[in-house]
Image (cartoon, rainbow, N blue to C red; front, side, top):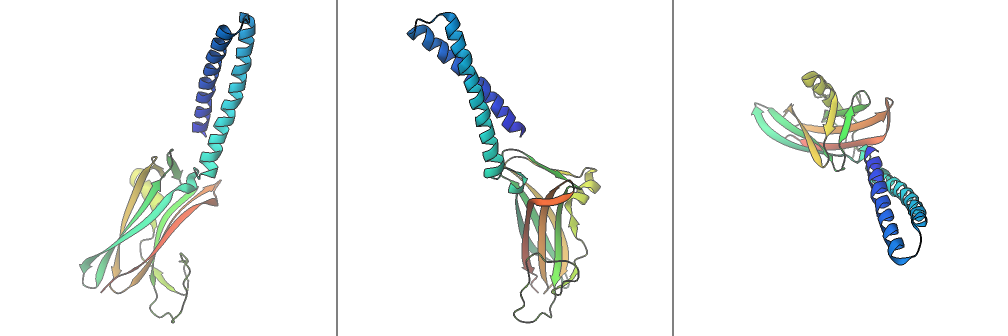
Length: 219
């Protein structure tokens, strides 16, 4: 909202100045009004332009931050994967989680009011034909998933461990890429689920985005 206030203030000054100059010029060249009358009319024009500036600034803030999705939930998240050979029957599953900020303002989030994580589960090999598996339903004990891979990624916790700071920052029109490597068995099928959730006062709200993918590890 700071950007909206700056724009409103800028509009206020520009429109007010234009109104005064135009009003004075028109009154002096086209009328026989005295200076007092001209100044009174200029003041009225200045006040009207001030109201218009506030309306314009408010409309811009409403349109950008709400109607056009300028809030934090506009963040885009993508998952890309690559399988590399390793040794024996083991493979390396390389996962890139990318956050894209399409807004004109930077995105900041940190724990505990935000969660940013990547989970990986191996699909069981004894499911019946026709079984439907919900997207992202990787809770422990689910009938279709085996044990999760040893390393479940909490990006914010990792950031604290590496830098001592849990705040992520994505600059305007920029991308932030996090890469993790999982050691998996050949022939397995892995479900990936990345999510970013930003809450208010520690509670989750509508500012939530997630991405999932299924990767088969060839023999």
